[in-house]
Length: 265
Length: 314
Image (cartoon, rainbow over all chains, first blue to last red; front, side, top):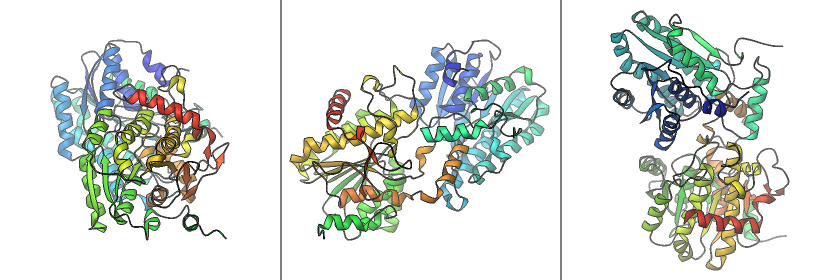
């Protein structure tokens, strides 16, 4: 099986999302980066968003060099609600006035013993993982409703439905986001907007040998037997925002190697 | 019985000492310290302790706003602290040059504290691999740009934050920037942390005649923003596994402050310190956190790295 990067470098270009515009938050690395690259390879014009201008430009470059269309909108989703609205407006401007797809991917995860989580971290996880998606959707969904179409995909987590030590605030924020999917589907779905959650499992990320061993051990007992690649999550997002998923509303799609649903032994 | 005051000091402090414990009774009035990355984690506690002891502390940080917030936070507990913020982006050699050009007066303590860890593949504007560029070359250029102010201090120290992560890699002279081999964040981080140790070895060798000595420290296992790229479930599991022996940030700053104020440094002195004492030289990192490996101490490699670094920061 190809590595995440090999997969991203050898994407087959197609036109299934031609004419579609997309904002993917937190897309300067990891899962978000894979999503923008996959959507762009299928013809979507994308906004790459993150806190780091250099990293955002690097992702834009990798997309344009592959023949895609991408713009960088730098901004911190942990900032004030007006800062988040500024990001929404900047994305709209960059994309010619309409955002067809919003992927709420940006997230932070200050995990640790509950008593030790700082007030700052607690505020930050709620701001980035819960408040920012709410503000962004509030800013961008009305135009989707007016146009009679669009997609909102929220990136959740397998940990939203399983109790593991040390993750109360983070996993609760992901559970909140998953619930916002269902509510928004009720609110905007009848107007033609698809709202869904993609829920990744333990995902391969940069780290050291020990964290890699832990990740390997954690995923050894899943159906897939290994960590999720960011690009696997991106493929699910691409399907959900294409016309092929027009009958998927409010659902959570688990792309997790089976970690949440299946026990092998 | 050994009556060397430094050794006695050394026995008083250990893994659970905090930076403020270490500066108790130390007077740094009249001295100037520069701490990179001083607006978060261990950097804040290092700046706080040095300021508590009376030093004028310059917080060299990427975001002036974050630096000012740290100043306010330190002054809330230590109203008399003398603190200043300067802008420094270690990924950008022009930013390093701006700071060194602006500097005036002697510099007694340079704490190369800032660092990045396990970042997805990325390069500096000059094309260097991100960890090597930020953690090593940025600090290398900073220390060299401040060489005269350090010499003027007559007894200056340069403390580099390393890590047991240095065990993952020596210096890959044939492919420093991962252009010929696949990128690996753990190895890239390890190479940069080895470079931080070797820098101290060679800096002491070159500059001890001018009273400048240098050493590296391993702060201990501490959870900071550095692990932000890990999978959340992995991070939670590692925290659970190590919950019994993780240091707090003020304990993490203790070894930096210990080496800055109490350790005996110089040619032949230990080049790598942990838990407020010299580390053992080991063949493998012990328990994931302890010991220094030979590849980080080799004087020939240190000299070669210095030459290459000069060429890369010219």
